[in-house]
Structures are given as C-alpha cells and as structure tokens.
Length: 128
Image 1 (cartoon, rainbow, N blue to C red):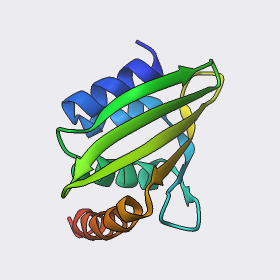
Image 2 (cartoon, rainbow, N blue to C red):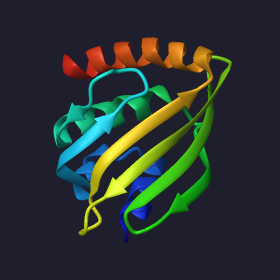
Image 3 (cartoon, helix red, strand yellow):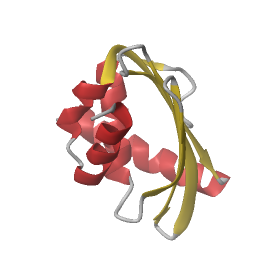
Image 4 (cartoon, rainbow, N blue to C red):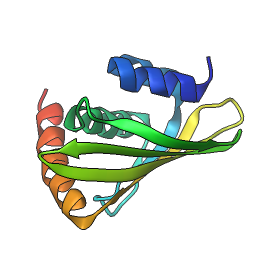
C-alpha cells in the first residue's frame, strides 16, 4: 500500500494511529491559519488529527494530481452551513514518507470558521 492509499484509508477510517506509517520524523505541517511552520511528526499528527475531527462526513476529495514526489488533493466539505474548499499539498521523500503537508483553504468565510474550530480542537487535544 502506498502513502496516498494509506492517507485515504486514514481519512475514511479516522485511524489516526496509522499516521506514524506515513509521516517522516521531520515532517513539516503548513497551516492556512498558523503563520509559522509546525515542525516534526508529533505536531503534524496533532494538526491532522484536529483537522479530521473538525471536518465531518461531508468531507471528500474531488480531485487528485500525484507524482512520486508530490500530490495535490482538492477537497470540499460543509461545516456549519459554509462550503469549505481547499487543497492538501503533500511532499514525499525517497521512501514515500510525507516530509511536508500544506493545507490551503478558501473562501475567507471558511478560513475564519476553521480558525475558530481548529483553535478549540487543538486546545482540547493538547489538554488530553
């Protein structure tokens, strides 16, 4: 199973324990909200777990473009009546592990909503 297949399975099953299978130790997460890159596997896992908890059953990938080194997955979902559209941009190392996970979101109304919901979810996950 390759990294993208595992990622799609993680999204489908919400099995966040499998993130260790695909994230490089030095993976960097780039958020549409947080200015600074989030360095390391543990922070990347925290942000991806929070995001998958904020999104709901309407989350779906609608386009995918992939090479051996990169993938761009466009997604859409509805959160509190607001249509969220975005892309996950992934970079893979020579072993197929994710070294960078960048998320971009539109429109501004969705960015603002996700900012508030992600902040709350990150605080909840950090206190566990």
